[in-house]
Image 1: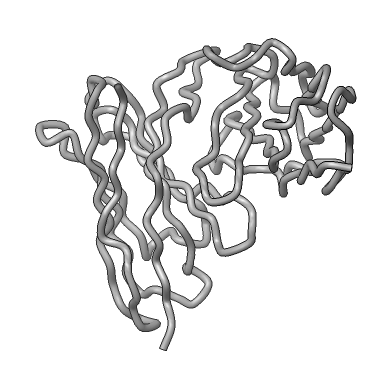
Image 2: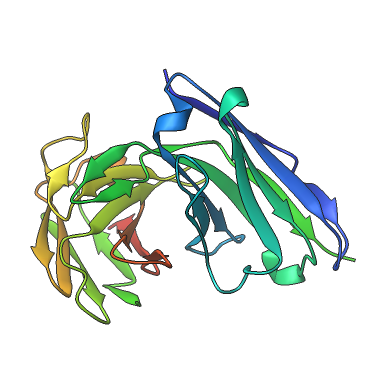
Length: 122
Length: 106
């Protein structure tokens, strides 16, 4: 059974930092793209970042580029999101996702963790 | 690439046929997925590649379209289908989602 367990969320002041972690199990972690998606309270879904199997291709949404860093440790089957210079508008539930369904050259986001809440407030 | 879903909300009854549309601001081939999200839960993948049903998803769900216009159809609504639905494109980075369609019980 695929399991994705996020941790590291919490309350942080504007300008502060947090590091999210995602522990993966039940699949061969090193074989798949991994993504982070967030959802502000009462709002829709926003894709944040993804990382290729070997870490060689990384993509970000413009609103976090230069502040957030996605990384992975295939030996530990773990995904990370280092978040610096946090803003009030970064407040959201952050989901870790394994993109294991492949079609037409694209990896679709099919396994989602339960999410971890990040609250940026003074 | 922006995705615009319509309607933003919809009231329907059990047994109804429902269609949700997703329009892209530029062509995105068939690199589209649809998700269902219930309150307090992570989204579930329903459709990928615009029309391929994810394993375990009931056959009353179907997807179609290519280029800029896509649809998600539920052929006969069941009580468990009342939720919010999102389209998503994976044509290029950044990946984006539609704003969501909230499906409510009439």
